[in-house]
Amino acid sequence: MPVKKKKKSKIYFGQKTEDAIIRYNKCDKQHIKNRIYEEHIDAAFNKLAENLIHTFKFYYFDVPLTDVKHEVVAFLLMNMHKYVPEKGKAFSYFSIVGKNWLILHNNNNYKKMKQHTALDVLDFKRNIGMEEANKEEIEYYNDFVEQMVNYWENNLNNFFKRKKDLNVAYSVLELFKRRSTLENFNKKALYILVREMTGSNTQHITRIVNQMKQQYLLLNTEYQKDGTIDTSNTGSIFA
Picture 1 (cartoon, rainbow, N blue to C red):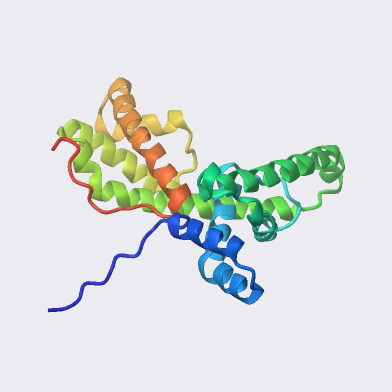
Picture 2 (cartoon, one colour; picture 1 turned 60 degrees about the vertical axis):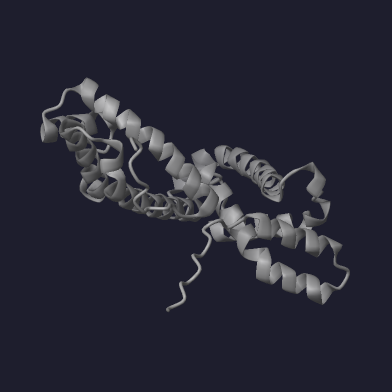
């Protein structure tokens, strides 16, 4: 009988990471500490830093966001010894530590950028830092939307049973698939497109969109936390 492969956990910063941090702090041999960090902590810190940057849109930096991420990770490492398990979960503690660092430096850079805005406009120089930020934000968003689309393709029938509701939901999903070819992606234009595709009135479209929006928020939270979305068929919510 073939042995089933154990399903890999999608949680990037869970109890195993917290346990590793505790072991790291208790250890007094540097070579062992280095191994613990490299094997069990580094990847979690990197993913946490990346998610904090994109979730809270800390984009006011004049260096590539990969450099910003490395700075955040270095700050987390520097403060690792301050973590006290009795006071809360490691994920919460290091999320706050990383976010506070980003708030401080992001706001300082924002003030500097505002002071130099007029000069930047006059000499037409490219803002490489912001271009890099926009590029990474687009990549982050596109990856999330791709996974969200896959989720809905597998689960629309679990949320909507009436044909008229499914028609609207599938139309909304189709627009997400065609997002790169749509010139006008504002709310009013989308409602008009869905109305033309389905013949439904605005009130009906709004009701379906609001139901999808509730799930969107849950999926976004899952993506921010785990770096991925479970896109499998979850089963009917009416069961």
